[in-house]
Amino acid sequence: MRALQAQAQAPQALEARAWAKVNLALDIVGKRPDGYHDIETVMHRIELADDIEVVRDKDPVSAGEPVITVEVTGVAGLDVSGVPCGRGNIAFRAAQAFLARLGFRGASVSIRIRKRIPVGAGLGGGSADAAAVLVAMNRLWENPLGREQLMAVGASIGADVPFCLANNDAAFAQGIGDRLTPLPGLLGVGLLLVNPGYAVSTSDAYAKWDARHTRDGGARARALARAIAAGRAEGDGGPDLRRICALLSNDFEPLVAEEHGQVLHLKQLLMQAGAIGALMSGSGPTVFGVYDSPGQAEAAAVVFGSRADSHIRVIPSCTCTGARES
Image 1 (cartoon, helix red, strand yellow):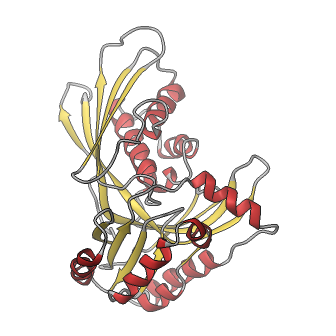
Image 2: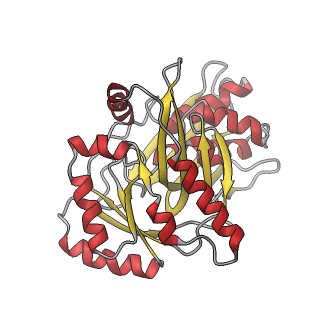
């Protein structure tokens, strides 16, 4: 995170990166009495990020409600026309929740988001934006919230926000995504993301699961988490990538594929392009292929891109490990 304008006590503006994630495994454990769902999932941060700028007006505009503005743009070819700029934007709600937690009234905050992460894609872009806004605002207000307090605010906004705040390379998440067990990152793994150019509603995907399942699920994400942890413990080489890929799973995938059969077709194409494994991330529809190295993923992107329809976004990436500017 970088201060744009230094002041005597605190910067007035900060830039941040909002890192995307993929779900390497996702089990829907069951529906809770409050209507939310308990999940177990293995998430990994990846090298794809939105750019966030948060600007604080040091002079309160009034004694009334805070004034929060959100501006969203996208990189060339990325459609952000459906992204709300008001209360419907999770970054707006993050700023609102932060100010409410501290009882600040009359504050004025401007948020600018330049998106690289496809919208409604299962890559956690909205949650990443919200987390980046929370961290930036905490710094702009001279760190009034500790880590646990900030995590609690994040958990109240969205299921993936705590992971995005935690700054772990990888984690096993339980509950609604707020109970995190850090996992060792997968070093040097190439990824090829394929986004078919439309969004999938997470709430609709959960509704489909509710209609089909009469008993709780689970266990596969736990198996993958154990394999990742055990692999790192066995030596510096880390876990066996082929063993990891054999455990890739997502409860949402067959449900989403019923309406969007292209998801399974894209998985098949990724495997034909040399992927060790392939899976839909989150509630979709983005599908990712796993490769031994970023170079192999980039080579596969050239082949895949030449065959894909024009509306399909093909994004070479890799696992995100080590220190990052947040």
